Amino acid sequence: MIGSDLLPRLSELIEWKEYSGVAIISDEQVVRFWGANLASALGGGGRLVVVPPGETSKCMGMVQHIWSELLAMGCDRKSLVLNLGGGMIGDLGGFAASTYMRGIDFVQIPTSLLSQVDASVGGKVGINACGIKNLAGVFQQPLAVIIDVDTLTTLPKREMRSGLAEVVKHGLIRDAPYLERICARSWEACGSSAWEEIILRSCEIKAEVVRADEREGGLRKILNFGHTVGHALEALFYQRGAGAEMLHGEAVAYGMFCEARLSHRVGLLSGSELDDIEDILRDLGLLVSMRGVSWTEILPLLKSDKKNIGGRVRWTLLRRIGEAVFDVELEDLLIEQTLRECFP
Ligand SMILES: NC(=O)c1ccc[n+]([C@@H]2O[C@H](COP(=O)([O-])OP(=O)(O)OC[C@H]3O[C@@H](n4cnc5c(N)ncnc54)[C@H](O)[C@@H]3O)[C@@H](O)[C@H]2O)c1
Ligand SMILES: [Zn+2]
Image (cartoon, rainbow, N blue to C red; front, side, top):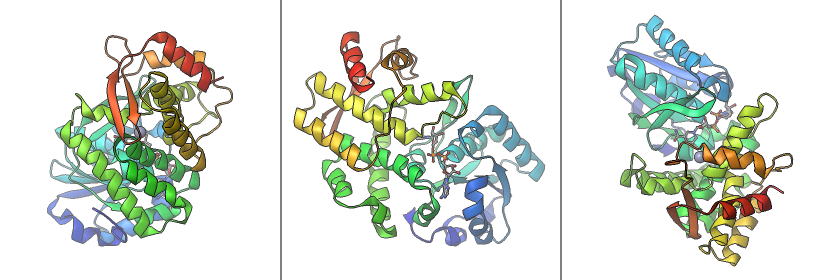
């Protein structure tokens, strides 16, 4: 469900009273803005489990904390979990719910743009472990996804931009006219009806692709555009630890910049479309500085990507704006040349 003013109407949207218990999982920042809304919508019928914000909470220790809180609340197999927050909470809370007593129902209530257009659709939940992002997880569809666009009013600008990168990706891989519509308006001036329209189209694109290939055997891989280099960047900053941080969308935006260049270099994408893509990413303010990142650090990280098969990187590239191809294997030299150019 996508719309405005949905949180206060939660009671009409899900039959939560049929459950023996309801737990709301959220982070400290989101709960400050939206926790009271949700709690009052449930008339005091839900119990809160609040974790610290940030990617470090998406870990096994926090899953155990959530399980023990659920136990302490007396949650049984007929209990319901509501995940109120960004992609971190959706992944963490979804994973905790999918594994608690072999899995209980959960509802995603995404509050960041990134989670509304991407993380909450597709049924992937999981945590980081052994120093690797999303190492452990399952495919488990939520009972429902409730997207209240009003929650975006409290989201910091940098986080909005991060989510916008996935919106741009959806246009690039599947829908050129959609991308044009996004570029034609100033996203900072968008009101709730404009956001409803944008989020709806992005969810449709992701759902269309996932429906065709839920387990990522083929078509779903087009959603990985920008994510091969993007994940390497995220892994690099994750390894660098405290103080160094890069948001998912920032990594993906730069990843799309590199992978569009690769697409051109192998003769798929035309030079003029490559220029258009670079202009779009710049105009929307999505390209952050990569000073201090060397191509020699990125290259080995590409090789350890979870999506590789037999140690070979499989790329998702663009044939044109609006059409992606997947499972492309490339010569090492070509990858190296492009990375040198993108991370001088
Ligand atoms: N499961 C999937 O398919 C999938 C897809 C993409 C990303 N992800 C995961 O999603 C996570 C990134 O998601 P994210 O960017 O939403 O990060 P996030 O959940 O960490 O949220 C980013 C920040 O915004 C704050 N926030 C969220 N909503 C807010 C609101 N309405 N008002 C004010 N502050 C708000 C959070 O407290 C946090 O500090 C990563 O862990 C990534 O791996 C999962
Ligand atoms: Zn992504």
